Image (cartoon, rainbow, N blue to C red; front, side):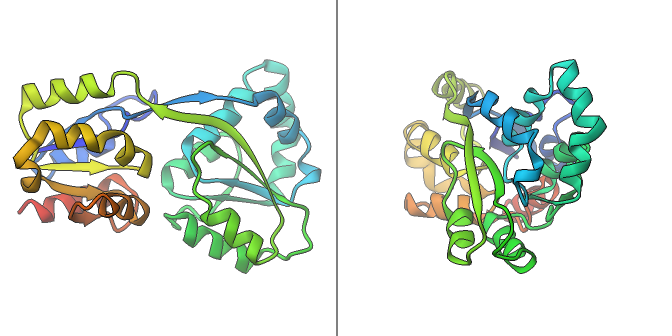
Length: 261
């Protein structure tokens, strides 16, 4: 059956996208449509902070985009050399917290040792941080996006764990989103399932999906990558047929395949 995945294809690696591959192995045809566009900001400030690890108690990454921003700060040869020679080792004496496997593997590419890749959500990660960190540490540094949820900062603040945030990318609707959705529905028809990957994805896509599927909307099985996205779909009054147990391609494919049986 046809499954519409509302996310951008994985960045620059070779081979098929893992979400397409996992669905295919279960007999379903997945199509990826990018929903969001990202613009990086404050990279000079980010660079300054990255090269002063002594001022911080550790790092927090909750999205691949934030790690991408760090990678962009290391594009100059001199910077990259200094990072690999000394700076990354100083960070590695502290805790580098991440949500999810995708973010963890990008963090490893920077030469850093991630903690918490199995947490899967900001809520669970914040519990791990609160368990591990004292309140008298220098602040944890959290580069994030413009539409970050306040779950993690609030939890840390309420428990006295110092935090410093910096917005390093802004999220907007992908310029071709509506056109791409219309083309998909025209060429492929109504998909058996639509998977959402973020609350912003729900916000930007749902109205168009409603319009294009009209009275067949109730036949579509809506899938969510995790509990936050699930809540965003439910808040729009739609029934969520399944949620991935963990935010991975395999877990999402398992959940979708089960719901489409």
